[in-house]
Image 1: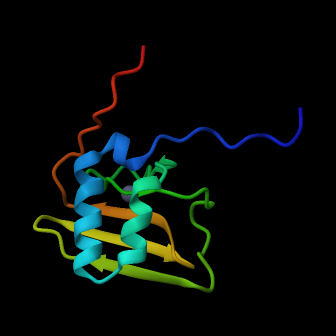
Image 2: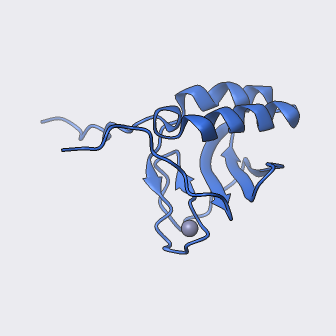
Length: 113
Ligand SMILES: [Zn+2]
């Protein structure tokens, strides 16, 4: 074996197509067209895991939880009709999607097993 392969992550647009479409639309509203274009290929790396019932945030890049994002980091606050959506972006890459106070996300992928 060579270096371990990164796990194969599903895409956000496969798991949560409605949310992905909403993200694209809201990013375009904010004039963040380059970020909007990345939503198509955004991987769903891991759920936030904090366990708060208002939080459905997820990671979209393999970044160690709790570590600072470092230089190049900015937050993009969107204005959804419902709840809060905030993106953590580093150098044009969406690292983390904060999904707060929203209706439960429906995972449209077929159930495993
Ligand atoms: Zn959380």
